Image (cartoon, rainbow, N blue to C red; front, side, top):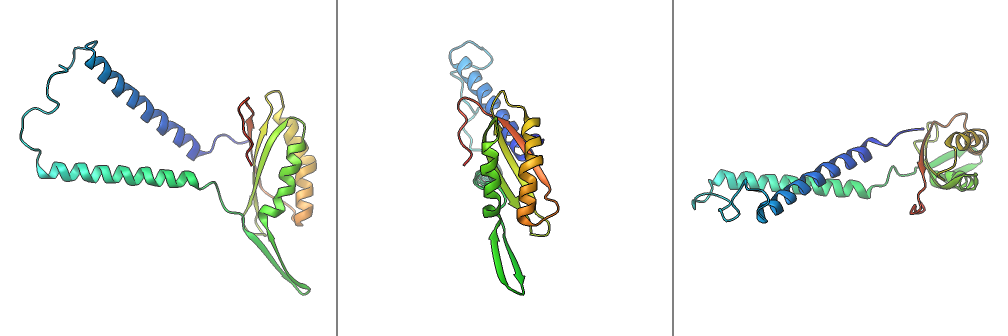
Length: 188
């Protein structure tokens, strides 16, 4: 079993940190406005004086805003990318040419996983070239299911069938278990 992926953990950490900071600033602003806190006079100007800021400060503010906007755009685009694309395996023999999409090859295993006792849903991704494939599984199990039982059934039944169908000796596998909740939707 594997733990949460690093990008997912980073996303949660950054979003929680930004959320807490925004809540703190909002709370401070409301407390000052309603005179619960007397640290700042609500009637005082935000910036003392009437002189415009130096030109370099305006450029620095604009550059910072542009940089933050580009970082936010990069983050949003990264969220749209769901994972590595499944390759198409090609094999040329003396009898002809065969092409097989890795997503097509892995679909029966995902369907089989969904029939295992205690499995709510499953998603499988097969990446890499034909001579060095890698299998990534996300298995959503019921709250009372035992991940060890699902894993043993997968290792005893599902993975051997997959290796036999793909005519491979080994397929490195990364398995992530998630527990289903009342609001869990299908991964499909």
